[in-house]
Length: 101
Image 1 (tube, rainbow, N blue to C red):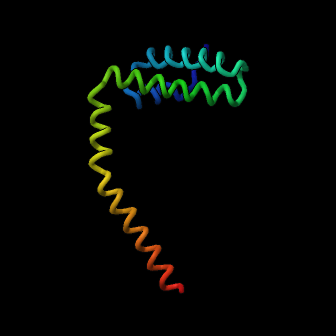
Image 2: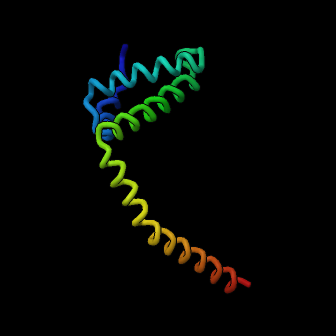
């Protein structure tokens, strides 16, 4: 089976060996075939890519559990900054509306 040309790039993004990414792609195509019943249609490819990303993410977390923990910590640490940015944007919109009125 031919694999997508972007598969090595995705393997690198998920920090997986290319051979494992190819095996996950084959599994994703198999699952997409079972789910959609039609090979080559747009829903088939969308399902295949979604399955591949889901499988690759799970495999990456299984192989590198600390990475998932670090991502969570990064998200938690950036939440106050995101909240402050959202608050600033909201206050700017309120000021713009009050000036326009």
